[in-house]
Length: 178
Image (cartoon, rainbow, N blue to C red; front, side, top):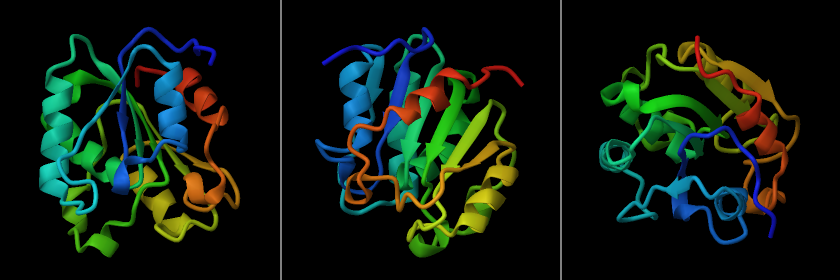
């Protein structure tokens, strides 16, 4: 296993439903980035936005320096909500395959507004958790850059994304100031 060189900042990995298992790209990234820390939810099978966002906030608060967030699916939603409370603890965010809040009966108002740090939203043209145009609208809503990676499913293990070196470029090339 080779380590990856990323910008010097904590890397906060925020998984989605079921904690992005051992073969998921987030786990692959975590194993290769010594500066990473993974958010640990109490219940990975029942995503509740307020509880998950509080766990992300708690983890951010304990970091010594502002972090780069790398979130997936429902973890993206929890990260956006957590960011409202601690924007000074976040340097930038890469939000991969965000889940559609409507599927979880989350009011859109809970997620609206430009985030005060650079954001990249990575989306797939055939993601069953979020239509491409909805992901594009959320990227605009959050003031972020939007990247359509083509037909990549939900960008998870089931869609063939175990090791996913492409995520490194999304992290490395991201500016950290607006």
